[in-house]
Length: 218
Image (cartoon, rainbow, N blue to C red; front, side):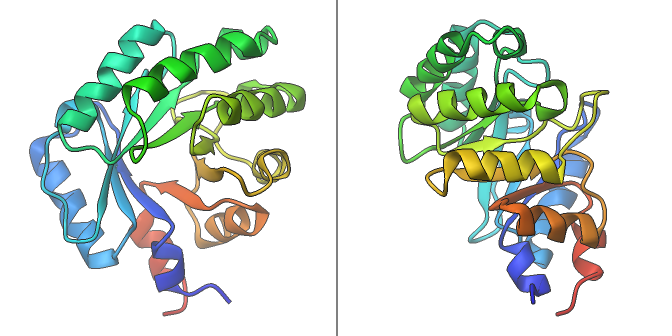
């Protein structure tokens, strides 16, 4: 049985609304401390910040469209790390994946990986709701070949939708435990969060962390 504490340890407590104020970010940090989440995830312009003890700082690059030049994504990622980010979630250039050009997907991830080498954690957002199963598999393989640490379902901003159990299962089957899997986008209930973890997710991107955790056993 998954407990509240166990699930909290998998959560990136997230605030990526473009209108979020400094006060909103401070509230996010306080809530992360109270809930004992793994990390907070904020927009790069909200950095630097001082996280609660034991809480990692994650941010995004090329967000939310992915339609940025690779060198721009790399600069944004490197600037975020200089500003204190421990983890960077990058959005791929989606037309590459939709066209089946996974060499191009891999190449742009490599550019960002070079800019933010290990131990920075690099997560690759595939926006799975707009991809076919074959495209999801290809994106996962490209991310692994390029040296990413995680593959991630969604930005949460696509009108096509967010995370799905099917996408997480497919990603888990493809990366085989070699990479982490972050499910994000539209996960708003305890049942949905548990379903993603059961499907193979090793991290959850949540903005409704409190509501989800309060619905679980202590």
